[in-house]
Image 1 (tube, rainbow, N blue to C red):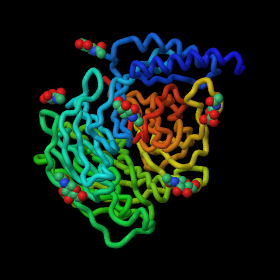
Image 2 (cartoon, rainbow, N blue to C red):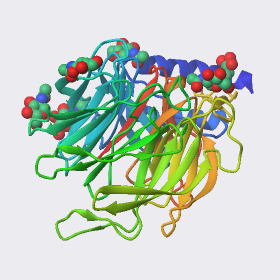
Image 3 (cartoon, helix red, strand yellow):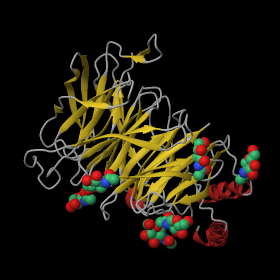
Length: 439
Ligand SMILES: *[C@@H]1O[C@H](CO)[C@@H](O)[C@H](O)[C@H]1NC(C)=O
Ligand SMILES: *[C@@H]1O[C@H](CO)[C@@H](O)[C@H](O)[C@H]1NC(C)=O
Ligand SMILES: *[C@@H]1O[C@H](CO)[C@@H](O)[C@H](O)[C@H]1NC(C)=O
Ligand SMILES: *[C@@H]1O[C@H](CO)[C@@H](O)[C@H](O)[C@H]1NC(C)=O
Ligand SMILES: *[C@@H]1O[C@H](CO)[C@@H](O)[C@H](O)[C@H]1NC(C)=O
Ligand SMILES: *[C@@H]1O[C@H](CO)[C@@H](O)[C@H](O)[C@H]1NC(C)=O
């Protein structure tokens, strides 16, 4: 087998160097015998020569400071070709998060700034090719997540290291203007003093009615909530909800299967709205019933699961991401630092699998908010810090921080299960986020 493959490996190396020379970083493979996989590499070759005007793009941020734009081409046989369209370093040194404002054709990128006193939010114009920097806004350090709210009129940004939520109005030229900061404090350390020494807001989320902002605070074990002034987009801080001490809430998603557009076009909460929460320190996935009251959002715990479902949580695990599928039928989570599975080697000619952390599939019940565990699947490498699904929900892009790569996994829309990588890009530094831009 190895003798047969030897000449093929030479050609693969040739293709790799070809890619390198033209600034293209490409690796397409499938879980089929190496000789078959090679034929996919060959078939992918003509696509490399095509123009950059394809309708699907991916933006990838990394702690290398780079934000790289890739085009994604997909054949009917599900052969995926990724092409590097260019790099911007305007969110360096620690590009930590990306969000697309598809209406304004702008991407928000943040610099988490561990090594400098202040971080930034940079807005980027989307183009036929790579992102083009539009405007840069100096802010508190520690930015890790943004969310667009009030019909796209404003952006809220959670600063993990800066203990603050900053808010910004979006301008017609794509830039931002600050409309208020909320600096948080806490009395004494929490149950995990080394991680819960102070407030650490980890994500900013908007509720399905676009009336409230929710911020899981990992350091303070709180769900911080804010009401949105529809006229000014300014936030008003409400009474926060305390989760179980030591949970370390990180990311989550509102699940409102019965929410419907109301008379003014805004979504109106239906009978059942739930909040699905991923806790990093307790490695649990929780469901809360959300109550819309006169004084804001109320929460009632429905149930709590270990993030590995039917399996005991492995030592060292660190839960990370939580996202609903576009059809709201599945909830997906990710867990880091517990490589209990393997994934095919990025080199299609190397049959030794590499260690992989996991992504989970859960089914939320629209009537009760309860979660049924389906399975843990290989994430495609180490530390799936973040992932995102395409609009159709049949592909997932997974950012693998410690593997310095991202992968494209197939996803079965009917079962919510992930398959083995269809494509990947290596050597990107510590990948922090990968998002889709689809026409
Ligand atoms: C993309 O299309 C536009 C016209 O629609 C053209 O001007 C541009 O050169 C194309 N870019 C590439 C990279 O092919
Ligand atoms: C820079 O960060 C400090 C806190 O580290 C903060 O007090 C200051 O307001 C920030 N500067 C800007 C322009 O946001
Ligand atoms: C970005 O887009 C905005 C709005 O279309 C435009 O005003 C601005 O000139 C663009 N900036 C760059 C650098 O292309
Ligand atoms: C990963 O897990 C090991 C224990 O298995 C632990 O010692 C280490 O601190 C963990 N690393 C991170 C970055 O969480
Ligand atoms: C194949 O991959 C494994 C795991 O990454 C690595 O240890 C090994 O050196 C590789 N073999 C070859 C021939 O490159
Ligand atoms: C970052 O981008 C620069 C410029 O394109 C490139 O030379 C460098 O290799 C990239 N680094 C990583 C880790 O991707």
